[in-house]
Image (cartoon, one colour):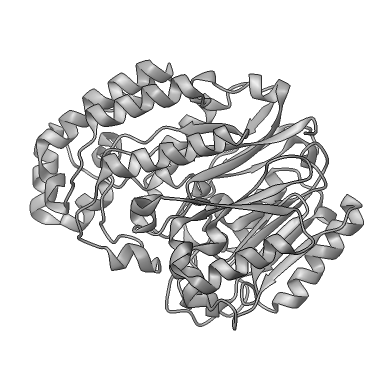
Length: 447
């Protein structure tokens, strides 16, 4: 492989993982609202995915879960006193808000931040901007803790440059890497960065029945802050028809890696024009051929793309010449999608393997394999600048699996969130996790 490489930072599923149906526009989230979740199984499925990628030879890492509920957040809203009493009060007043307070949605780390590699940034540093997640209450709670975590994990300021999250208002609505694509000749060379937005605040709102999560203005702010070359930066608009079908983030309808771009024909406004611009920019600046793999609506409908999460597969490099698609096992339920994937393997492109992983618990809340990971391009020197406690290996895998089995419940219903024993269990669990990972004590000291 080249001097640079991609590290997958997967989100470790939290112990309060439940089906709250909090994400309007996320069809799976709403469909399973109120059902009984299995946090233990969800976390173990996530760990098995990490181990599978690690065993394939990829560099794998993870981001730990956030502590829920966040007492500082509740104090800022006027709740005071013992957390037990606060939880009891909220449970009597508003179970929907209690669900939001216990959300484990930071496990989908594709929404955690936008990260630009050092090769793309003018000052030669890796730039990191945590997402404000302003359109969803339960997710907007995450940004401050995420910012602290990212500064702890990527702590060497000679390598990493951290930016504050954008203002928490819809004008600057930002949902992180789920709406960001990077294409390049190899990981050690300068690439092009594609920002996908749903709304330009200076234009008429498109007609969508579901919320638009990313604004053009937010994407432009991040590109400026990251010191990206404007000639190598593109801004492409989501197709309102896709949003109405449940494509709340771009990573539900397209995925790119190195010189391969896999997308649905209805992914963007004027998809052909958008993709032509991406191809021209890539070939002009990266001096390489871009493989375009388009899926037609009459082959895979938008509805089936959302139901299967085909495009939320991870597209990874196994070697310099070979890529693999890591698909959710749900894709196997659609014979025409399996046929399509087999056809891709037979055509002239770097994708030579397809693997199916079981992340069913996550899928039932609307998050597939790609939602669960944040991609970070590093080299050996930059990797040394990361906190070693979050780097995945066999020893860490065994420790995390034991931790999950000891502290996670195998059944969790919305009503269980009012049980004071739940947060007591969480306090103990996070205290142990902090010691295992050697994280900054301040990350888990809000109680």
